[in-house]
Length: 308
Image (tube, rainbow, N blue to C red; front, side, top):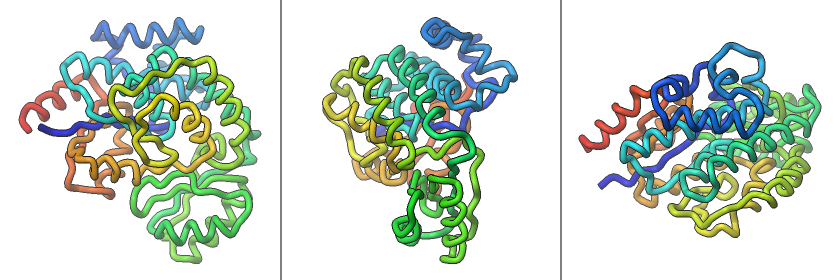
């Protein structure tokens, strides 16, 4: 039998129309979107399915992404596909919490709405920046960022792709230093803030206060936390890790490697885009990666798993 991981993408993967066929053609999908509208006081289908300026604004993006991914996951689970472990990149970790039974879908959607607002408010637009550093060893990047103020490693995505984050001037200076150190490219990203940097420590503290009122349960399956790339096996660890996650490095490559070392051989990416599948090709080509983005994909995944 395959060991299956459900994995969930983070902010940046959002797109207009995500989850629309799940909403229009399944009772389960419709109920997830309608419940999100009820909880948050605005139309989630309108936000996700109609052209608008809000979908790329952090305070809306996060709730939209989590709603769409949960709707897709619930439809997949109703077809009998269950995960052995779960993980999500940054924002996607909240979907992993739902997959693991640690947090209810209601609480995940409500919490990420607050998380998005806190992250948006933390740093005035234009003061922070993020950049993807391509084709340079992590150790070389750690050396440069470690010797500088106001710049941090935000994401260890996969071999050859690491993201840095921090104060705009510091990130730009680090990009020049990293190119001089041998990076193939250093690309500034189109994001609204310096996510996963020390500049968001206060936002993390405020998120901790929000989480005080959120119920967390013991994990029904293990999930891997971004902060330490380790399995979380008890409810007592959850809130502290989520608070730290806002301003800490996302150890995605290490998280995937930990799941593979544990015998996971099939990864199902649930949510818009194929970002994580792209990373997977660089981390380990020996595992199976499947995607759920459309209703049609659910049939493909079910058939692929039956054929294994």
